[in-house]
Amino acid sequence: MLPPLPVTASQLDVVTIRDVLAMLELRISLETESAALAAQRRTDEHLALMRRAIVAFDESIVNGRSAIDEDFQFHLQIALATQNKYFEDFYRQLGTSTIPRTKLNTAQLSTEFAPNYLHRTNREHEYIVDAIERRDGAPPVAPCACISPTAGNVCGEPAKLSTTVRNERSAS
Image (cartoon, rainbow, N blue to C red; front, side):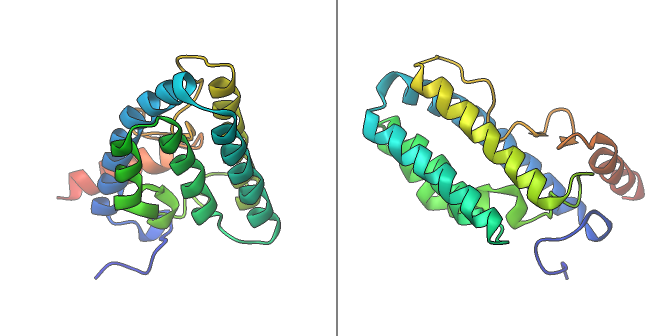
């Protein structure tokens, strides 16, 4: 039986890691294109809703909450700005399960204090919206680039995640 979510690195099940990395691979491919389309198609109202989601995310952190719903809203607003119903459908169908910290305590996998980690994640959201506002075709980060499934990197902590995956694979 899996421990309650979110789990820490010491409790991590390799299936959870693989699931999170697989979801991030999917998100990176979709969110990169989503952000590029949003940059082309967005309206001022879309930008205002993205920025409102960023403010709500910050307020959630200040109030000691995980900001999961606010994070989801941010990414949903980008999907809506694509004006392609399938991007929206993707996010609505999967909901907050696309967010790694619903399965892993990603802040504990980092050396950063949890609120700092969340603030940094939200600053990355600001960079994405700034790029969308400028109508840049390729925003600088996606999705919350502190997590790179191809590099085995979680917020600057490649050793913790990569070592856990390698150890679990060799034990199998």
